[in-house]
Image (cartoon, rainbow, N blue to C red; front, side, top):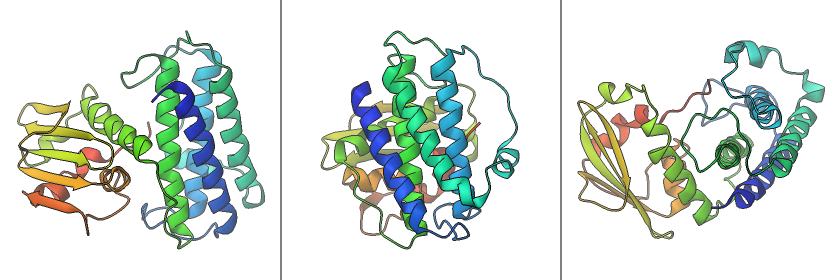
Length: 252
């Protein structure tokens, strides 16, 4: 996907998130984030959008240390201003990315063709996943996710987050291999976990675990937003649950 497509997706997903937030109780539980209620979810995404926009606008070239997430959540605006605050932060991020130069230089934390491409992609998927959270908190089924966009998000997770330098998550899971196939997007990924690290590559393979599903279902499965029920899962099904620690992503 191109930068402009990621920005358009960010715009769309943020508007859906805000719409869900307007119809949800701020005290409603978020089923996909058991420790959160909607108020926490909105505080998180509002700060994330502002955090990302800060790098894009200022061209900061190193990570800026800040308060931990519990402190940030506690510092969110009061309830009567919270949803509008989220909407304003989202709109501001879209504007920052839309007006940023193609040659933007700033800090990033995953490989990408450019810093602008990184931030547009990362924030589009950050927002999409939390849009799903907001919709689930209302008791509704999530709005559809485009297959190309969903496959792009799987690619970011498997080839981006799993390959982050310094991660030792592989030491806490059972070794093995898995092939994930997005049946409606013509895309597959193979992940191999050994005692020395995680290797991920695009393309099918003879993984010990084989998961085949539409891209949107695969996206939600790997981001732990849906169970594997109803999906085509074969081979070492024990890896699905054990490997959830590989795919958990925290904001830092």
